[in-house]
Length: 408
Image (cartoon, rainbow, N blue to C red):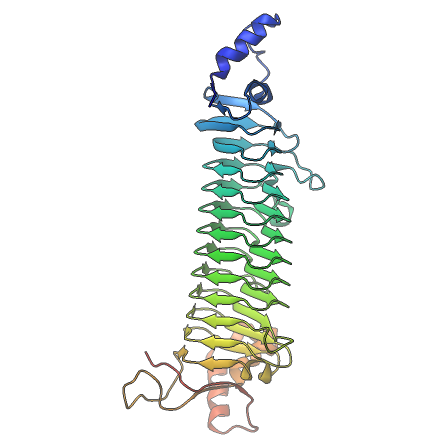
């Protein structure tokens, strides 16, 4: 392995070509020259300081900034473009990319396989990391933020296109637009934190991915999945998503997804899903917590079919809402905990003696007529709801029946 002391090497080169030892006062030393002096397989450890970009890496090298090196693209292009497999980039601050959405200017544009991107800070860049056709890469423990502009004019913190078998873990995304994954399969997103952005994860035509132990808060939406099958969503925590149309999790034409042991707190809508087109194309929603949401679950379509087992619903304004009652009724409800359950457990087996049934009373008026949201929880609405339950003028629609509700 070759470790380069670039300051001495570059100064020697400049003496040979007659430029002299001193950098011009108005220019930053160009990082591209240091990279060109580093042989394939070599380790580049620049002297602490700020260097100019953009730079392009065309052969496998390691750049280790040791937390003391800044590469500044000075508003032009992507800060670093990696075109060589087995490249390592760590301990750097990458800043000031260009502003072009057409060219997807980013902190890092990665067009290679088996790279390691670790312990970097990427700020004031349009996109954070743009992964184009890259496989088997590791992106770990980076802190990424976009340019200071309105939400819709930011770039994505991470973008994957046609990229497979990558590991993205322990990263922090702050004030970016989305984490956008399209036509990318079998990637793992673990222990990432996404906040004050638009969408946490948006998956389109991206199958067999895993999202585990991620935290998403104060965004517009959490996890949005479109035409993306056989995905695992496990132990994610999604909270404080208060946008009127936002959901912690939203699924459209997405099947075979396992939603297991997630915690969804204080969101406008906890989970939104359409009815499956085929009986085998269902969602498994199991062991999740839905607390303090406006609507915990929303189903739309003509029929149900999803499996909802052992979930916990507490302190939501509405636990379940559906476009038509049968969209939720024909789901498989079993062993869920409902804080509104009014039955008994006389044999003390932890299961209610009677099924839990949820009807559509006047407490759903504000869902059908959004203008009445102002009055939800008001005494007048509570009175109307009480009177309708006491002596209803028509039979209410049955939303769901859980035959074995948990009481603890």
